[in-house]
Amino acid sequence: MPARELFTRCLTPVTARGWHVLTFVVALSSLALQIGLDLSGGQTAGTRLMRTIDRFSFQSDLLVLFATGVSAFRPAWRNRLWQVICLDAVLGSVAVGLTYLVLLRPVVHTTGWDGAAGHGLHYVVPLLMVVGWVVFGPRGRIVGSTVLLSMLWPFLWFCWAFGYGAITGFYPYPFMDVDTLDHPRALLNSFLVTIPLLLSATALWRLDHRLATVELLRGPAADVSNTTSRVCVS
Image (tube, rainbow, N blue to C red; front, top):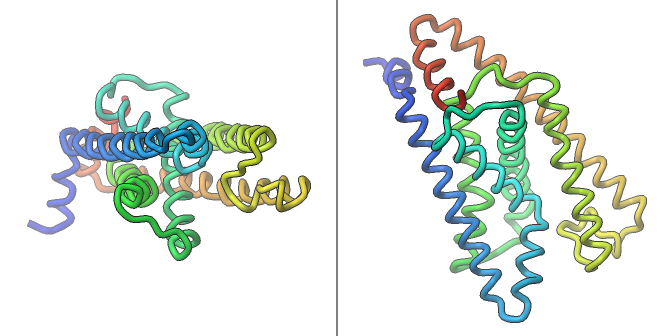
């Protein structure tokens, strides 16, 4: 049996749901482990936990948890909010995975349980989320308004991070540290960061439609993929 035909035969509702369950379990385990490590920090437990929640990567994994949880356990639930959250989950996974792989891996070294939580949140979960979206879909659900609405989460996150930093003096990333930089520079850096996010969301939109077109051109094989997509999110 040709490899392409074998791969297509694997695109079943059961396989899709199994992948979403796996991603959900890994994301939940990584988040629970990180929260447990923070809460075991003695008198600084509350501070450590808030600083973890303050990070873009933690919130990205929360979106992954929600998106895959719905796909795995409530496949009949579908609305515009879920479509935006799903796109944000993929977008956040791409941003977190690339950022930690390219920029932070050479300077961040963790071992033990901290290392396990960090690798789960920053490498394993993003990889599972992106691969699951590319392979299992859904297809053709992203439109222009979805892309624009997906930018609401990064905007709200920046507002939260700057507000929390103004109160506590903690900023999750150096490019937005007002204590080191002045306010205009920190705000400009944050604005510049949103540009790649918007471009990435637009690229995912285009990729979504291209993959949908490829599935339609496959003919009979497309029925399997489309059924998988409907079961995942419809």
